[in-house]
Image (tube, rainbow, N blue to C red; front, side, top):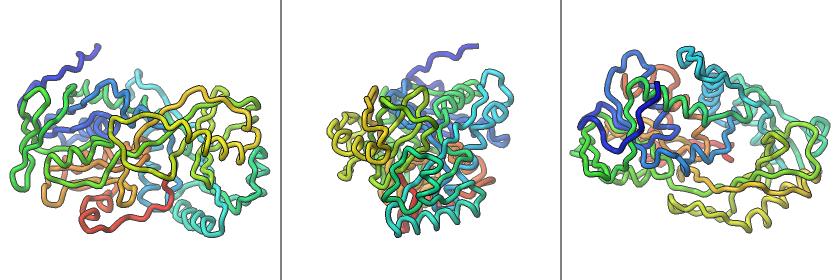
Length: 405
């Protein structure tokens, strides 16, 4: 049965859980609430743009990796890979849900200094201890496996081809949203203009159309707009929109094998895209916060930095043609580029799921599950996400993650 169109007006004036933001984190949380046997409350998801045209979810490069420097981030991605690869089974065997697999061409980190090589070695030890399939590669080993690279300046590489590469995160998102609605989660097309707080509790939100909606618990899932949302409740969160550029290109001389997602020492990354196309991305060294509505391209960045880095690393890509380009936003956590989750320590019914700094799509299964557990039980029942709680923000205690792209 087709779903009713999403409208602006909520059906009720009070909900057990109100989620602001209906993209990947909001919909993941909503779906996992419906999949939690002990949760039987009402859920409202408020999304300002139900087309999701400019959402970070829609503009993501949609890749997943296990190459992190902290065990928790590795575990988060491992659950994400497992969830995605068993999507139909996890959605109750619904035959409408496609069977999906990860295109595991892997990430390949390239170190051009001894210091960065030491970082890769330390990261490798963490990843292997957590069960990841990462292997370190000398320059000669990289050249033997991928002879198209120029590795004259490379000291060491780190590569993993197990559950690491491209995945169709948008399809996963679509099915979270569809099934959540079919199971009773209400989505509306509206915007929150005010949050009412009395002391240590959030009471209600006010919508752009004037309705006041009371809530038992409030979830901030507004991506790059997280700080604006929190500010309405008198809460500061160090998340800001940072612009990231992506390019699809074709090559006059295509490669004869899959191209790993290659993280060049210059900061530019490039990977296989399929169908004879490749995807590259990056950002200038000058990386300020931008307006959440600013998606203009910096056309000089491609000519000055991206294309020269690609052509130097892969000489076969000297003659390439850009066929599509776009700018998206990271929800950039300025403290440590890691997630901010769980409740505010002084406003316990204000729940964060913010600040993923480009890792949101791949981390969304674990984050949605964890947030749903916290909303239901007041604790985590699977993977402990408390290291990512807001307390560390107040204490100015960053979690060092040395594998941020």
